[in-house]
Every structure is written in C-alpha cells, then in structure tokens.
Image (cartoon, rainbow, N blue to C red):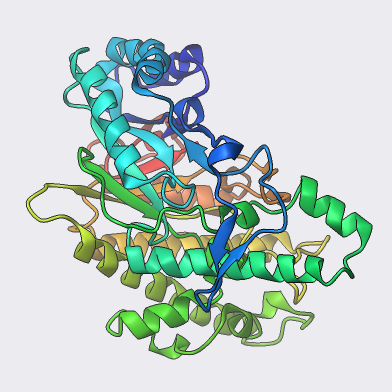
Length: 413
C-alpha cells in the first residue's frame, strides 16, 4: 500500500510490481481529502455529560479535519493518477479515497458521493476489477462507539476551555492553544457519528493500534465501554477501568525498574488488551455490515514502537530507551496480530497489513516513531508470515520484492 502525492511517484511504485503477481493498494487521501475550510468547522461540542458547549478558541487554519472537492474538481484531480493506474492495471489492487474518514469529519454521504465518482472514472478506463476500500479509525463505523469517542474529545475541549475561562492560564499557554494545539480540540463536535458502511465500497478495514489505545486520551474509557457493550469479547477484566488505571499496571509507564517476571506480566496484560479491542471491534464490524452486500474485511496491525517505549507516568517518552526491550515488545504485538489473523482468516478475506516504514517524525503528535524497518526481528517475522500466507510466491523472507505485497499478508510503506 502506498500514499501518493504525484502521478510520477505513483508510476514508480507500480513499476516495481510490474511483471509480478502482486497488487499495489493506493491511498488517494493526500490528493483529494483536503483540509476543511475553517468556515465549516463547528465550534460547539458536547462533553461527557452531553452538555452543549461553545469553544473558547477559533479553529486552526490546519487541522486533521478533511473535506472533498466538488465532482468536477475531483475528476480533474484523479484523472492523471487513474491514467497511471490504467497503464499498470494488472498490478492495481484496492483504491482508498480517505484515511479514517469519520474521525476526520467526512460523513458517510460524502464518502458515497466520492465513491460514485471514483468508481465511474475507474470503470471508463477498464479498471472494473479494481476495488474501492475504506479504512476506519478503530470502531468509528459504529454510531454508538463514534458518539462515545466524540464525547471524549468534547471532555478534552471542556478542560481547556474551563482552564482558559478562569483567567489563570499563563500567556504562553494561551498562545500555544491559539496556534499549535492538539487536533483533538478542533475535532470535538466535528467527527461524523452517524455510523454505517458507505455504499459502493468493496473492502472495509479498521486500524486500532496499541499506541492509539495506550496514548490517545480519546480511548480513556474504551476498554470499559467494550466490557459493558460486548460481554463476549473477553473484556470483562477491564470493566469500570480507565486507561490511566491500566497504565499503572505496565512497567514501562512508570519509574519502576525491571524485576523478575515484569516482562511476562506486561506481555499478559498487553495480550488481554489486544484480544479485547480486536475481538470487540471485529464483532462490532460484523454486526454493522450491511446485509446483502458482499464485502471483504481488511485487518491492519501496528509494527512501530511509539506505543511501547519507556514512558513517564504522564505518558511522555523518556529520552533514553532500551532498544532491545522495546523491539521485543513490538515483536510481541506483531505476533499477536499474526495469531489473531490466523484464527479469524475466514473473516478477514482481504488480508492482513503491516507497516514497514523507516523511522519517522510525526508532526501531528510531535513524536519520533521507530518504524519496523529498524527492528530486524520484527521485519523477519512480518516477511516470514507474509511468505507463508502466500503459497507459491516464494519462501525467502529476506526477499522484499516477494514480501512487499504478498497475497493475503500485505505490507504498507
């Protein structure tokens, strides 16, 4: 899977797959999902109690909220890219139009409108076998879940607004809020909470990374919510527990030194967190799938290290990191995904996708992220599993051409 920014870049990526049996999935979000105009960003939100509030700060000019252009502009934007797809038709797999649309304020109706345009433009170029796909952030495809997440964002905005309105906030803090705050503040009240799988799409997936679960305040009550709403998903142990309380049980979230058995205890808890969030979200997705529409499900898993670094109790990463221990935690998470996918392969017919990018700096969360490519054991496990999941496509895990887009286990870069 590749994100594209120019037709030449797209052609270069597809050229690597030419002459092989492998498919390249393409995310067009960077091209057509533009930052939302400030004039359409709502400045009201509801907190956890459901109280309607008005934000103290105007929307930033750049947020994670997104909108699509009108149909004619959309066709013009897509034309040179889809012409490239036509040249490499045998190696084109799934086309994605926006990443995490509901979380980023794109409603179902807009996904359907743009899906109709994209489908037509693909079909007129003879690309009828190319699938349209949508990837949701965690369980945002479900209205109840999405409402819970949006209310959590509202609670975050409420704390900022209440602090500011007391008149005690330092000048530097106020300036930061006005110019470079977390996107959660603007997202509050602007997420799409109507739920539902948009019509016209063939592949549906969701990402629910460990780093998101542990570090994103939007998920403070998610495991407890799952325990209450999906009692058969193995979440009972998390009933009435916040993520802050769960952090206190993980050795890498406080100042404790490693003791005998600490790593095993961490692994057992992280196993339970994985099983809960993936089983509950899978059950929720299967329940929400529209009847009578053949849809393929795609499983996406994390293979970077930003969720398993050594943190202070407030969630900020420490300067010095035990690289081998961190890599071992990432490898555990990869193994969890491989095990879950194997057990649920009949559901996830579109396959399993890992991310194998290099170390990068994510400006949206101000964090250096250690990508899988810098962790040899992680890469080896991904390529071994990819080769095994694609019989006949080669068995050499070091052959990245064979592993990059292999069969049922895919790799995004």
